[in-house]
Image (tube, rainbow, N blue to C red):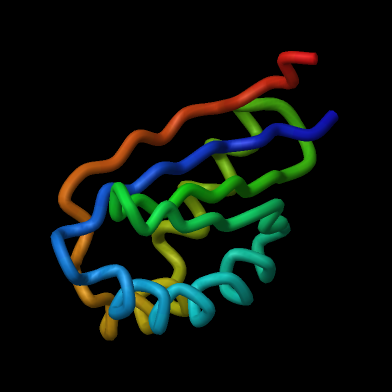
Length: 98
């Protein structure tokens, strides 16, 4: 079983480039905890960044591993340079529709 989390960020006006420069530093840290980046898409017109990350197991397992990841020193180091440019976000689990 695979669980997919869909994440959508609305950026502060004009800050997408700052986020895009930072984001690749996050991906390998998530990978260390078994998360797989499925896609990452930018909607320039609406200044949104949408991405999906998957992990083996059910939603409870995803949350368990995510909690460990959230407390990890590697993640903390990456977030030392986070550009703090997200104005709003939606995060939830996604399942296939077709």
